[in-house]
Amino acid sequence: MELLLNEQERMFRQQMRDFVRGEIAPCADEWDRKNQLAYEAFRRLALAGLTGLTVPPEYGGQGGSLMDSFLMSVELARASVSVASIMGTHLGLALSGMYHYGNEEQRRRYVVPAAKGEKLCAFGLTEREASSDVSGMATTARRDGDDWILNGGKCFISNGDTADIILTFATVDRSLGARGITAFIVEKTMPGFSVGKVEDKLGIRAESVAELVFDEVRVPAANLLGEVGKGMRIALATLDEGRLDVAGQGVGVASAAFDAAIAYSKQRKQFGQTISEFQGIQWMLVDMANEVDAAWLMAYRAARLADSGQRFTKEVAQAKLFAANTAMDVTRKALQIHGGYGYMKDLPLERYYRDAKILEIYEGTSEVQRLVISRALLS
Ligand SMILES: Cc1cc2nc3c(=O)[nH]c(=O)nc-3n(C[C@H](O)[C@H](O)[C@H](O)COP(=O)(O)OP(=O)(O)OC[C@H]3O[C@@H](n4cnc5c(N)ncnc54)[C@H](O)[C@@H]3O)c2cc1C
Image 1 (cartoon, protein in one colour):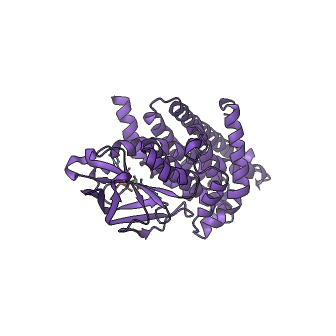
Image 2 (cartoon, rainbow, N blue to C red):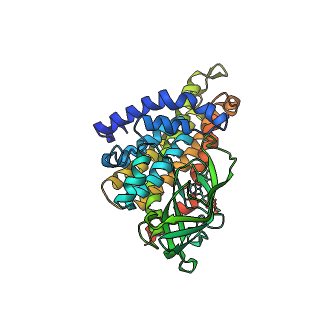
Image 3 (spheres, rainbow, N blue to C red):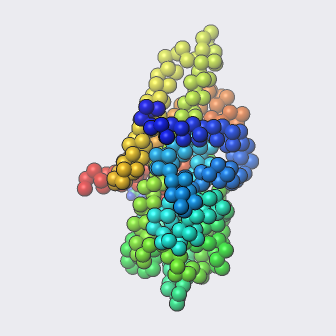
């Protein structure tokens, strides 16, 4: 794998490893156990100049590639999927969408402070009744003079309760389906915007997920992102980038679980020998290694395609699907290799196992990835 990265990428990966070892890994268990929001991590990422990694320097970022973003996601998720998810939402979804589709004024006003880590972003697409099929969205945008008036709500929004800026979507005409969906930049201080239920969940417990409520929220016309009716295209293109980060999360958490399983199997003794000497364990480890490597390679391919400006929708859906499956399988096997100790909260194995599940759900479920892939295969 190392050989497939160039010198700059290897250096960046090392920089990320050092950062994660010093700033994230020591706190990851505690943040998860206390169900404490890991926004302290966001502050640390901002100080390290990472919150705008893929944004050009003239807009407050680092000018990094999507390969860099993938590598960052892997390294963060090795320590904490929660932190990787906070960053994936902030950078890979919201900030990236605002940068690519924003005009100069929007970039100056929103992209610059978010890239510098002065503002945290969220991405509000999902609704109670419109999720895998967002074309049925019920949040409406009505033109009123120089403003748009938003009514409705979003659910399960990562960073939702603390984000300063929300890239959100509403329909200007429900009868138009996907062609009515339009993107808006909403600030949390806009009158009529509020945070509803904050969810209690199985995994990524250090990251928060909340309901957003829009009650006659007056959004200036200057905050319309792109064009009226082009929001679905923005959402789908943005999700392609986001899915690369999710693939990175899968590779990261699976790698952490795999490394732990290797180390434990070499020191745990039963029947007078280390458990790594049992063929049953060796074969499990081999399968885990294969899955982790294959997941990395699929994501690597998608990142290279993306950075070379080619379409990568199918490849990133394949990478996300495979990495999510890998994360589930490898964390389960790693926990099994640790036996009862793996089940206890003294070790991070049970956290890895709980955190892996979300990768099969957000940014399009595994079934939706299959839908995307099969459409491309059969087109
Ligand atoms: C922790 C967490 C964080 C999230 N963060 C965000 C966020 O930041 N922003 C955001 O907008 N959303 C976010 N989401 C929402 C997430 O993207 C949705 O939960 C996801 O898209 C699935 O929607 P749903 O839960 O309503 O399931 P549904 O769409 O109701 O699906 C239910 C089941 O049916 C299956 N299904 C649906 N359609 C098909 C089909 N055509 N063929 C086969 N099977 C199908 C699904 O795969 C799933 O198994 C988050 C969700 C969670 C749990």
